[in-house]
Amino acid sequence: MRAETRHQLKTDRFRGATLDAAEMTVHWTVEHKNKLIVAGVVAAVVIAAGIGFWYYLNRQDQQASLDVSQAVRTLDTPVRPPNMPPQPDQPSFASSTERATTAQKQFQAIISKYPHTHAAEVARYFVGVTAADLGDNATAEQNFKASALAHNRDFAALAKFALASVYRQTGRQKDAIALYQQLMDKPTLSVGKTMAQMELAATYEQANQPLEAKRIYQQVEKDNPASEVGQMASAKLQALK
Image 1: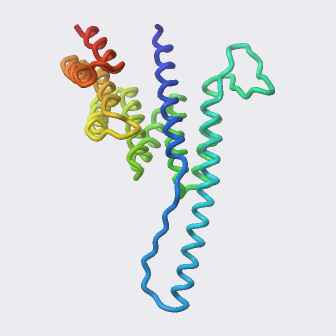
Image 2: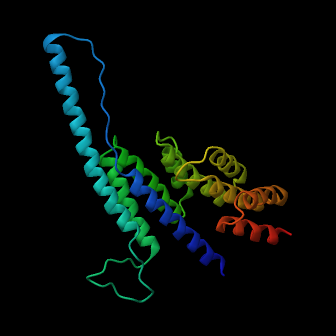
Image 3: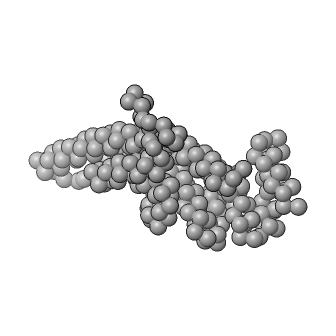
């Protein structure tokens, strides 16, 4: 299998996982709690203002979430085969570059219009995804780092996983290894332990540390003897011999 084909398959699988994760993270309810000890009219005014602010933020995030859903659909729109004209009843793009560029503009618009919403955090993550697709590693790194600071552990882990991939692409295996170790030590629903282990082992291979890679694969094989990931680890071990 050609290298660019393997890369495209890995990108598609990664994008599919991130799209699924976005479905879980794109909806958010704003919590507004005020602890005020005031009296009379002042208290009434403050509470009324608090309710109004909560309502405003909630409406903002609902609309932003709808916009994120639309941008995600753009990112998942098929790319036409070469020389195939567009079909009026079936949305498509002439290239993956055109698709990523269009989606990135939509995500950027969400960040600009709804900067204080959780949906904007999700949009920022996808700006990183599209930047990586376009080969803009600096922008991808910047946005993934910002997303990795999110309070939602699952969302932050997904951003760290993507950031580690950027580090690998730019030859910073040491930084990638540190992130994968963090994800392995503190697994989440979005990035499980075996997922982090397999990428960590692959990074050790890239860094010319086959003994470390072998150690990780052996552990995965031992912990998952009857699963697909265990079989993948076994195959990797055979290749390292």
